[in-house]
Length: 151
Image 1 (spheres, one colour):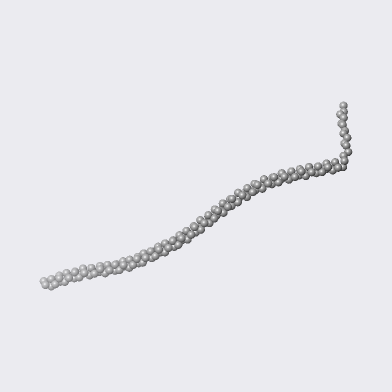
Image 2 (cartoon, rainbow, N blue to C red):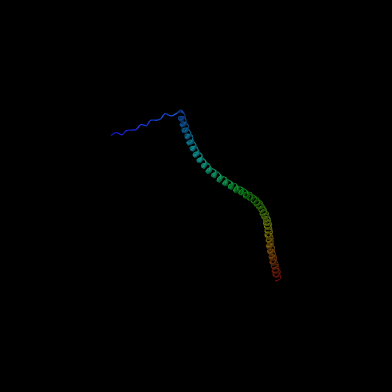
């Protein structure tokens, strides 16, 4: 048994209907393309939203960094001022120490001269003491000599 395929006869269509069908196909294609464009724009919109959030976050981070740098600059200015004051104070201290050491050096030189003078004086005094002792011995010798002559 063979199946019979029914053939349907197509009715001839009018030219206006054919044109209308063609316009319908074109409009449906345009509508489909607009849908595709709409989906593309929606995707781009989501991407722009993400990008906008990233830019906002980066901008906030930049503003925070700029504020930190401003604070750092202020702290460095204060530190520079403190270091300048410290340098001046240190230089003043070095001058004071230098003057103090110079005075000590002058005193040491004066003491050294005094010691040399004392040594000389003591040496002379030792010589005087010895001369005095010798004079006493001479007196004793003279007495003995006088006593020996008398005898």
